[in-house]
Every structure is written in structure tokens, then in C-alpha cells.
Length: 160
Image (cartoon, rainbow, N blue to C red; front, top):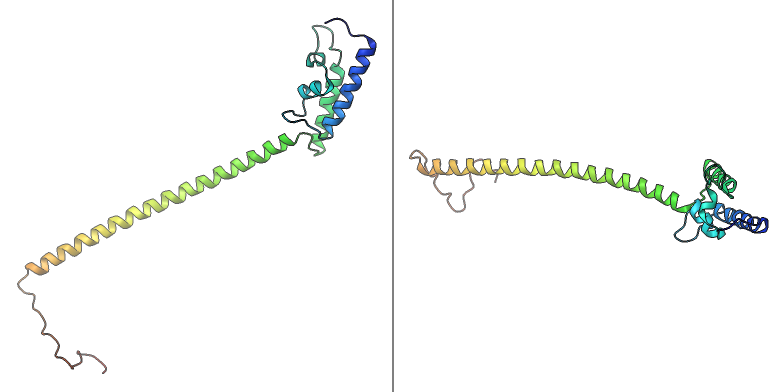
């Protein structure tokens, strides 16, 4: 690529300024961001013009510095220049909240599982004790049956 003429350079700088104003106003194209790559694409210039060429500055390096300064100023003022950045921050916060909720649910689940295991072991022990008592009662000779109640008579201690 040859040297830029003064007219081409002025035209490119005007296009960069206009693109800079659009991006800072929030007119971000799909798939773009509020960055130098999108600025160059919107202005129709190569991105390499924003960077130094060895010892000498790039032809649009001063505009790149101005753009980065304006982006930082807007961010410091709380102005959202790139909706994707705020969406990323919102999603990061949401992920953090969901991770905390999952951790709480995991802890609750572990606690409930421990309680269930304890309850099942206690029920099994009680069932075994009942079975042993039934066997002892069936094997013992000193257990007597009570006489059956006579029809029409109230049991002892009844208030009827």
C-alpha cells in the first residue's frame, strides 16, 4: 500500500470520527463491540493504521487513543457503550448466584440423605427388636392368654 494523500487521510479521519461517535452512542453492529476492530470496520479503514509502525506513529493512532480515552470516560461515568459488556457482567453475576444456589441445594440434599439413612437404620433396628420380642413371646411358657370378654359386658375400668 502506498502513502496516503492528504485528502484520503482527511476523508478516513472523518469516517473514523463518525464511526467513533456512532459506537460511543451505542450503535454497535451485530457481532461487533466498542473496540478498535469494530471502529476500523465501521470506518472502512484497516486496523493497522491505529498502531505504530516501528519508530513512527500510525496514521490514525491519535484517533485510537482518543477513542480508548472516550470509552474509559464513558465507562467511568456509568454510560454503557457496549451492551454486550453489561450483558456479560449480568450473566456472570447470575452464574455466581446459581452456583451458590446449587451449593445450598447440594448441602440440603446431603443433610436429607443422612437423615433418611439414619431413619432407615433406626426402623430396621426397631423391626429386628420387634421380631426378637415376638420370638421370645412365642417361645416362653409363662405367657397366659386372658379370657375373652363376654358379649354385652364392658371391659374393666370402663365408664359405661
